[in-house]
Image 1 (cartoon, rainbow, N blue to C red):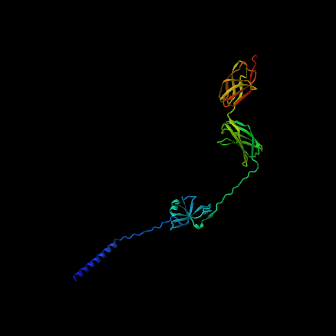
Image 2: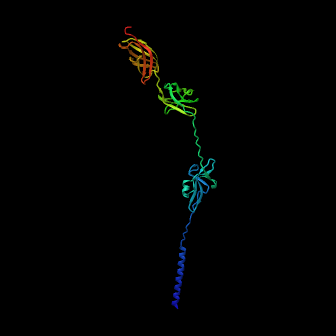
Image 3: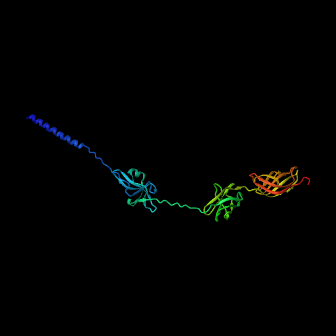
Length: 324
């Protein structure tokens, strides 16, 4: 009897221990819950977005947002002249991920009703072709063909098809054209005065422009250069062979004098002065030694500058016979 009692007591203790352990296990069990976060879209249907708030190109209309795919449906739009928005011809909706759209196009420009945005066909401007009537001007020659730097010169342009109101210009590359003043025009001739102060030494083109816009040019037609020396008088005006004189030449623009000479009418006999020097560009003094072999007769006085400009006083000096 005692043995059965002890066995039953042990079984009860084992059952109580099992219940106790089961309760402790239940209390120590940790339950893990997974929380799913749904992304929040920045834009809604009807939003017009771009890279900046003032973007004029690359502007998109948000058509819808698909939370499952986390994508926007969008379409390219353009602003019309009346301030409304429209789809350019040929565009179609396209999907893009929410993250990429919001990163590349972070600026909200406007919001409209999606239904209000219509397809817009850009207007192609009509090209107006202007046909000029009649023949254009033609330049055949000008006179004179040269002028002095810093002065004004009146030029006559000869040609054809010149219209009343035509303008004439001298042009050089890199410089502002010089337009003639005091212009008179006939169908074959234009006369006008040109101020050469702003042009460089060298050649210039002459250009005629008719009122209808047609024009003509004659390239390198006019030459601008230094002023030629001008001789007004000499002293003495005569001499004899084997004699020497101080020849004084009076005039203007005696700059950079290269030589002073007596020159026969046929140019075969020439007698040069030595050591020419100028004073205030109006007077030259030089030493004239007439050789014993000099041919008697009337001679021109010639002045040449170092830049090749000539000045003459014709029949101004007489070489007498040695016996007279």
